[in-house]
Length: 228
Picture 1 (tube, one colour):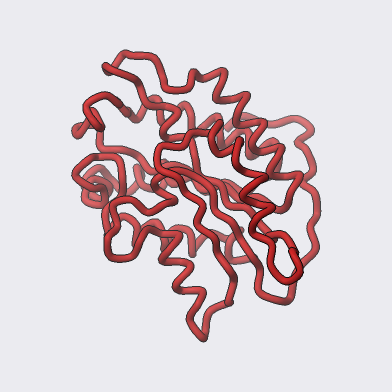
Picture 2 (cartoon, one colour; picture 1 turned 30 degrees about the vertical axis):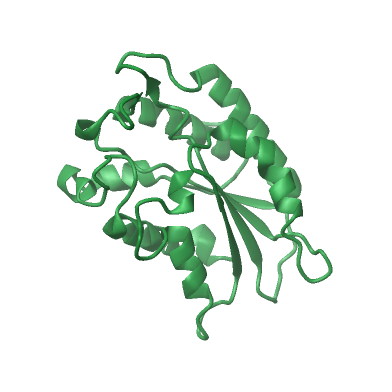
């Protein structure tokens, strides 16, 4: 992994004894598309935190199908400011998860990326910097697709090589800012092709019920989230 010289020091935020409010922004996997039983990992986590023996945190799902990094950036602060509770106290943390739509190739396997790589890096930097100015930030990485099921919607071609390139850029950008990053892509790939393909829907892009259950467990076992 590349060594980062003089990384930025992440701002310190006050700790809260009362339940915290979190907003989760991203794409269709945040929205929970493909999980008719539990509504996705964010909804499953929201329900779990509502149980009597849970930490009691408040979770807002702000996933929008098809969003890329620019779309999330454009709506971030507006969404954040509209989630005030208890005399408009703003949320305590933001969880971001975006990037898979940006790396899709259009029209054919060798087509241009939906968001070219240089533009993606610039937009991602804007998003992370803006988010850090608001509150504590965490980032959940993308799920690896099933390449054999492409194209998605007959026009979007996803592949592991592009996914890896874009997620590594995201990981590096988070590392520079000391933003915790959960590398779902590497984690799922390490479990083997059979394991991961069984946890994707027939479209090869979105997790199925078992996939979202696995995602929830990966998030729940993630130390930065446990510290909340």
